Length: 445
Image (cartoon, helix red, strand yellow):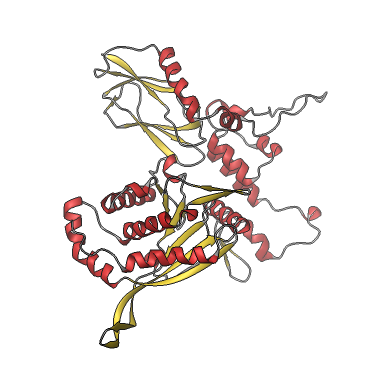
């Protein structure tokens, strides 16, 4: 019988700490191997931390809303699978040493930098509202404060409801809702706003005097809006469109999809097939697998494909398949199904939405024929795949031409014209189309 020390693992690139949001186990509770003990949140996503051994929780090191650094011991588990006890100090030290290469010191300094500067002391007596130190602000809270442009003075107005009066995410969102509802007094607004404009600040659906419905954007929708606007202001968007005849591909999938599901236990959708074509094109045109840093082009070694996934509330998230070029069609299908399912259940880990090098979006799922997608920064390209439709087409044969029914799809490629010219952008999407049109129909499962 020994003790196992559960620590906060690396939560992804540049993430040095997380906020404890929920304890899933009490002291004295039994925990099974791979069972989650605690939930944490970063400025990227929420996540849960599983235990690697069977045992009993004997100690919890942090409370809800505490900020935990990578490598810190969260809980102590007594387990028969651990032969000897390792002193807590030695365990923590051993864990902290290898953490340095993962989270460089300069990144830690940036993450730990105060959100606001400490005001210089003056002769004015302190007020009843004490200045809240940096330790009260979790990574998630700091990200919301930065995104919403909350000032230092406004931070002091937020009443913390967490442990030791710590400001939580709910406290900040409640403050923002109250701030949005405030209407300036007439003295501060000599020119009154029309009713339809002032009604926009309402936090819930409301109606104007004309009967129009006004709906407040969710926080996530506002962040997506900001991200898309910044992308349009950053990249010089240009599009190329290509139509592909995927009749043979369609017939091949219809023939093998049941066999595939019986053998692999997974559905074979068109998404991994499209992804395989994109990977093939990225190998032929590696400049599309790049990012732009000032005047420097950073051509990526790894091909990490992001796939835009619609959530139940209508918003989008882009989980990433890392090293996608190392996977065969079966591996791509399993990765696509796993990430899309967990994305809709809000179960993605932080690192699974980071470091994408190229993005695809299957807008055909919504019946769209085509579209002009916005580049996911700091990438330089994104491919939209429209709905596959039955179309009349001229078919050329040695015995003459005739009109037949074919299944076709329109591919729309948006790319950054600062580094990708029209010839390369057009040839890239044409390469994808050719790959789909000449799909190897001899593949079986």
